[in-house]
Amino acid sequence: MTSLFDVINHMQVGVIASPDVHSFELTEREHFVILGCDGLWGVFGPSDAVAFVQKQLKGGLLQLAFFQETSSATSAARRLVREAIRERRCKDNCTAIVIVFKHR
Image (tube, rainbow, N blue to C red):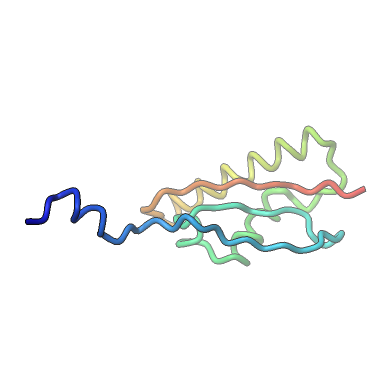
């Protein structure tokens, strides 16, 4: 006889524990990176998300002071998530982080 414990242990799990890892050299062309969960990417294409964040940051990434960059990145991430949920009707969990690179 099979117990419920045996059945649960042999079920396929819908969570993947192995991450996607990409490595590349940063150049002056890279201004920021957007980290988002599947809910965000379900309603935003990569180029749409980049254009949205660029607009939020107002193109002044290199002229801003560090504190302002941090504040702008936080604001851009919040607005990106708000757009995904309110305007694009994301029904999944939706989180985003915007990291702005400061080039020397």
